[in-house]
Structures are given as C-alpha cells and as structure tokens.
Length: 294
Image 1 (cartoon, rainbow, N blue to C red):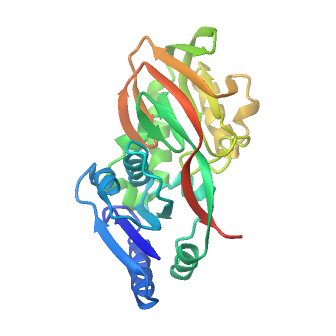
Image 2: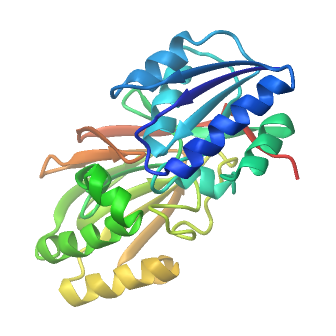
C-alpha cells in the first residue's frame, strides 16, 4: 500500500509522535511505500493535502486543527483519498468518537487493517468541518488557550479557561437570529453549538444523539440563565445531562442560518473562523474515513 503521512510536530502529545515514527519504520520494513510530510506553519496541512502524491491512505497526525486543515484540503479540491487520523493533539474529538488508537501496535494494526466509512461533513460559508461549529460564550477557548498551557494541563486547560470565561460572560447574553427552513427565531442566548459527533472539548456525551452518518447536525442553543444557572448548566455538560435542561434548545437539522447582533467570531473545529453570519449545511457521507476494523 501507499501511505502519505501529514504530521504536525507541534501537536501536544510527543509520546504519540514517537509511536508514529516507529510505525512508519514498520510499514517500510513490511514493503509498503511511505511518504512523510511535516507541517511548519498554519495552513501547511491543507496545502500538503491538496498536493500530496496519490496514495491509498492519507494519514493526519495531530489534533483537531490538523484534521480540519487536511479535510479542507481534500474537500475543497474534490480529492477522494481515504483519510486516517492518528490523534496527537490535546482533545481530538473526532478521533475520540471513533476510538482511534494512539499506541504503537494499535496504530500499526489500524493502518494495515482498517474499515472505510463515509462520514458526514459540515459546510459553513465555504469552509468544511468534521465535528463542530459554535459562537458565543466559551466557544472561543479553543483558540484562546496557548500552546504552553495545553502541554502543561492537557484538555483541562480548556476547562480552566471555560470557568474564568463563564464568570466574565454570564452577565449578558447575545442576540441571536437563527433560521431553520422557513422559520426564524430571535432570542437572547449565550451561544449556539452545532455538532456532528458525540464528543466536544473532551466531553464524551455532549451530543448523545449525534451521528456522523445520518445527514443531520445536532444544534444546541444555550439560553441566558444567569450566573448560578450557568454554572449548573456547565456541571450538567460535564455529566452529559444538559440536553434535558430547560435552558437548552435542541434540534436535529440538515441546514440552518445564524446571525448575531454582537457580530461574534465563530469557532470551527477548534479553529478561529470568520464573524457571523453563517450558512451551515450537512453533506451526507462526503468524507471517506478509515476506522477500526472490528
């Protein structure tokens, strides 16, 4: 087989990076053809994916941001190569959803004996995403937490930032305008989150009814609650019980439009997007993904 690796050496988990190098050598020893690229700056993973040599499997090694770039490189150029993910970042939501391995033997077995599935991809103003798009309260912590804190605290760096952000942000809500089909609603809310898998920010059951295969995206609107109600809601999120909270509005939709009076910046798969408004839709089964062969 022909393998192409796109490795982000700045991703947080160096142990996994070392495991990948060992796997590359084992693939070469097994007479597979292997090409390895390393990213240097933001945007490299996307550019490499666009121009990578023809291969049987394109492997993204890094966090959610690396995967986001690679997916956009493939989708924007209509490249149908199957994608594999080796999670080496801080959170790795999509990889966690599919329980993709991080240890040497697990990675080697995954890359040499995998099952291909066609997963849904979100499209937001021309940018593709595999897991989440959000704006408002705590949605920007993915690009506010610096690399040193992520290396020191791992995913807990996000949780710490979320608490401090909550204290500052819960005093006022944002005025959102959300359109689903022919219906439009305006309301005061802290944030919206649209998610394609069960995992968000390391929380395993943020969207317990979400599926990567159903052609729908799970849309959450978090209404204004006040400080005490907001902290109760945060605690419910940690336990996966927030979907039952009366301050949470929940839909499964194929597309929607969102705008905000406050002109908020959007988070897309943990990366900084543009400011609202956005038109968001789901492309059913648009990405070929290598998963574990059960």
